Each structure stands twice: as structure tokens, then as C-alpha cells.
Length: 321
Image (cartoon, rainbow, N blue to C red):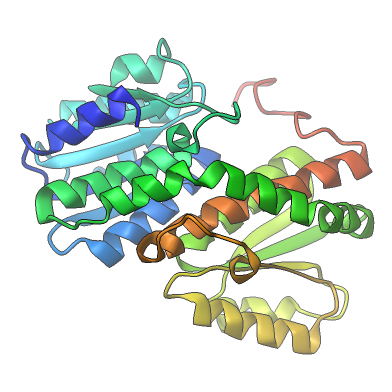
């Protein structure tokens, strides 16, 4: 575990904390959904909230104070809204912990605690941003409520890199088939719930809309039958995520309906993964990390088939906004 993470975990034992705010934008925000789910499921005494950075500032939660922990993330640490959110939180007396790839970033300078994570470097997955998010929340509820699952989480995350590489290898041909079959689609929907919803959201807004310019939307499996399922026909492409957390029945229900009335369906089911080395008590929280890695491979193959690199942009970082 990174020294910066250990420093934050030690701080937990010394500071009074009764609520957590998860604050970020885009892909950085998406990785916080699983941690919010952990807090809802595991914490008995600490409330938690998830905000897009700019809305966090403008909504100005009255409960934000010196007993609040604000966890922020920005890959390059330059997202203006998130940097300003860190300053805003500190002005309110809150504890700010920020994740960034750059120790010298504006976000790092604006925050009380900074954790510099690794990113796809083939090293210990324990030091990747999604893993660190889980370490931070399990560390908090262990310090405040003696939850007891932090050790099981850490041991599981240490075993995760080979699991991810193995599952990516197993899914590679399916990813290539997906790319060839879906490369000309104008819209692709993604369904998920619970700890998985952040992955569906990330894939829709970052991979498909931002990086591939494909119309998309992340559909919550629980909301599917309250409007969105009316768009379904035999030709509508849908990617269905099935996780291992307590909301899996929602995903199974939406899949059953989609398979009955639709033909363009891709299913990624965490039950098909070999998660040997992951503790049962935290498996539902860790499964999304494997789903994300596999789904990213689908996006990479789609970009290759469409001759549209994932790095392509027409507005982001190019025009004022």
C-alpha cells in the first residue's frame, strides 16, 4: 500500500469524521460509484454523498464542515472544477484527500492530502486509482467502526493484476467480434446497477461519447422499466453488465427482458470470471474493477475497427469551454 494511503489511514484515527463527499468529474467520478456503494452497504454511522465537482460548489451542502472528508480525483490534476472544489472544501474546514497522477498538479497543491497513483504500468494493482478509492473507504470504516474487511480487501487487490490479465486474454476474441459487429452503430446503451453502475456510466460518457463520438447513455437497471425500455427493439445495441453485489437481481431482470425483445445484446457477467484470490466478503466490490478492464478492451478493439483512436477529440482541450 502506498505511503500516502497509509498516511491518510493514520489520519482517520485522529480526526473526527461523520460524513464523506466524493467529488470529481467524468471518468474520475465514475470510479467513485463503487466506493459510495461500499459506504452505503458497510458503514453504520458515516453518511456519504457523490457530486460532480462544479455542482458540489454551487449546491454548497450545508453539512459540509470540519467533520467532513472530501475525496477528490483528477488524472492530471488540472480539471478546473475539481481544483476549485478542493479549495472550496478546505475553506469550509473539511479534510481534503485528492488522487492524481501528478504530484505537482494544481489539485495536489489545493489539497491537504495527496495520493499519487499508478496507472496501467503493469505494477501492483493495489496502487491504481480504483483500488485506492476502495482502500480509502474501507480504511475509514475500519478506523471508525472496526469493520474488519480492510485486510481482506488489500489481500484481494494484491492478487488482482493476474486475474485482470487472464480475463482480458479470455475475452480478447469476443472483444474483436464485438468491434466488427458494432463498428457502424450510431448508438449503444450500457446497463448496470449498484457497484457496477459507475462502470456503465464511464463506458457511456467517456469511451463511447467522448472517445468514439457514438451516441450513448448509461441506463440504471432499476430504472430500465420506468421509461428507458421503450427504446428497445431488435436492432438496438445494449451492453449488459452483471456484477456480484446485492443489486445483481436488478441486472438479471433487465437482461431477461432485453433478451426477450432484443437481438443486439452483449453480456459481460462477473460470474464467468475466475476470481480465485479475491475474498468472498469483498468480491462484489472488486468485480467491477475486472469488468472495467474487460470493457476497456472492447472499447480499444472498437476504436481499432472504426479507425477512430481513443485519443481523438474535437473540443476537449482544443477550444474554450
